[in-house]
Length: 77
Image 1 (cartoon, rainbow, N blue to C red):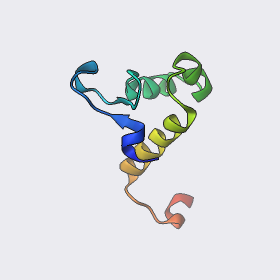
Image 2: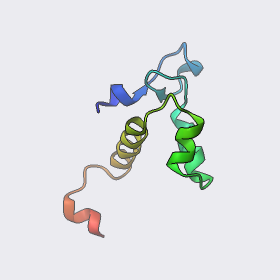
Image 3: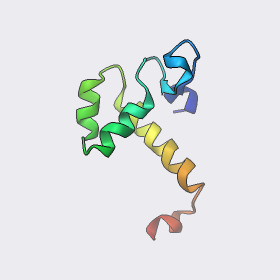
Image 4: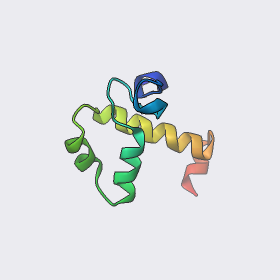
């Protein structure tokens, strides 16, 4: 999925906070749920407009952004 298929920022939706594309669900809600110890399934049950594919793609984008573009052997550390 492209970033645009996963995350949208529009000043008319939640004042421009990043939301999952096609929804009004802020991506921060997924982070908050995971920080609280909730499972991805629990989050998705509460926000059925977010697809599993979108949520996983967002986590992959966040991971890549946090660590850069690692080489495969870097992930084994």
